[in-house]
Amino acid sequence: MPVDDSCLSGFYRLDPEARRALLTHLSPEALEALSSGGGLDEASADRMIENVVGSLALPVGIATHFIIDGKQWLIPFAVEESSIIAAASNIAKRAASCGGFSTSCDEPLMIGQIQVLDVPSIPEATSVIQAEEASLIEFLNDIPSTMIQLGGGCKRIECRQVEDMLILHLIVDVRDAMGANAVNTMAERIAPRIEALTGGRVLLRILSNLASERLARASVRLSPDAIGGEDVIAGIIDAARFAEADPYRAATHNKGIMNAISAIGLACGQDWRAIEAGAHAWAAISGQYSSLSTWSIDDEGWLCGSIELPLAVGIVGGASKVHPVARACLEILGVDSAQQLAGIMAAAGLAQNLGAMRALVTFDNNSKLHSTRISWIWPEIDEEGPLIWNLYRTQLTVSSVNFMAPLRTGLSGEAGEDAWFNETESGLRESIHLEQYYYYVLIPIDVVGNSDYLVRPGNSRGIVVHDQYWSYHFPPPEPPPPPPPDVPYYGPSPWYGRLLDDFGMGRFQQAGMVFIAVFLTNLMLVPMMINKYRVKKRKVRREKARKAKRDGTMSTDEFADDFDDFFD
Image (tube, rainbow, N blue to C red; front, side, top):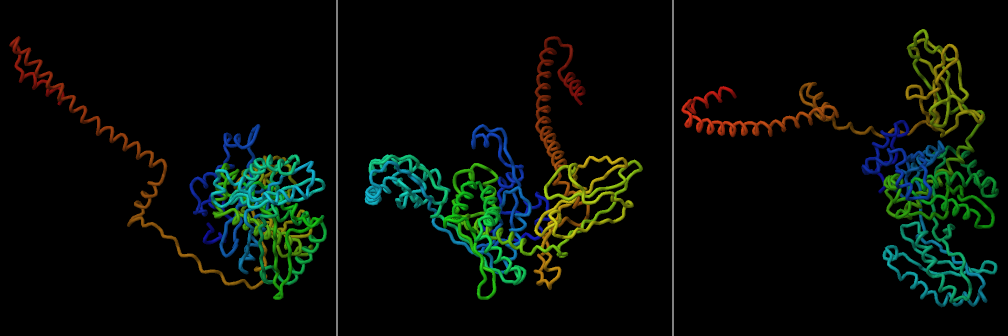
């Protein structure tokens, strides 16, 4: 289910809890999984793999601004490398002004390979297999299977000769599954019949991760204004030619594409290792390893990009149904089919590819365009407190900067005064760069040079170095502000509003529950005590009446009056 608005303006400025609050289409279970720090309990982990001793969590972030096939999408990434999500979102935002991305995907056909050795005559065996193809397919599909009931199953059988081996390809429609288990089961099942038909010996019966029958494609078209000008487009075309011609450059070029595709696959519980293997094999299908994407300029001077690669993904079975965070990420996407997921992944890979190339071709050693400015107010300190401060910068979330070199040392100022630090992009590796995320940390140092070097919420700040193109060019008109939210009516006086606020407090609710419990207990106990008193009174009257008749010492009415005086 695509979202109504994938922009989420200012999303990066929020803390994780506030970001999750904006994902209003998620179920409570998905939100709990995202907030649990990994979502995988030890029992579930122990069922997934062998010899479990723990689990490893990765950050899950969301790429915004994506418009794919006319619909807006929020795309989850699970990745440890900073700036990947920022770069993909930046290109998605640029592409959105030009219509976004378009995708198309093949049917979900997977290949199961059967290796036949010691075949007396490969041409004759091939002819026999082709003649028996219909009966073999019927045999393979004659099993109780939801996949086959939904229209999947073996569709055809192909024969290839590789050296002195006969290789059979079972072409299987796996529907919305990745398909490895179904394909391997079919290959195992048919192996004895293949041996009988060919006179050979079957050795390997296994899925191929080069899913050449299951290709996903994505394309995008951007105007010169959207991407940064004609010079930027020319640079991107030259960078793309480099990757197409040189495998050394193509390896890094394609790694940038897989930064997005593998991150989405990992977030959604896919076999990202199979995806990587298939993609790189496809990049070398011509005999030379080359670029997975192609870039050109059309007649109107717009930049046109496309990508085609095998993507064997699924939304049923596997880790996508076992891991709670993977289920949550699929819920964020809301895709209806495995083909739709593959198209989104291809579009994100193309965006990541363009973001990397644009950052490379627009880099300028003399550029003064992109800069950061950190400001703060000096706190009050006592005579024995810290006298100087050091400023640090990191791209990783750290708890201590003890082993890092500071950007600036010996900073100080009067309590209450403003202070700031400016940093400008340059050609140095240690400099800030476009579309990167940085944390600046201010650490106090005492008079003898001691410090705990700990990073705390009050002494650190994160910043994304965004493209400041519009700071130097005439910006487009801003959209109208959203209508103000409905504010609940609290009545004629402030105390009534405070009372309603108190109703939402946990302690107030607990006190109310205790009061109600005590009140209800009293309601039950008071009638019981009254009834017990009346029963006791009747028993005493009868006993005294019998005694008075026997002894003649005291009238019953007199004793009853005394009994009433005792309890009144």
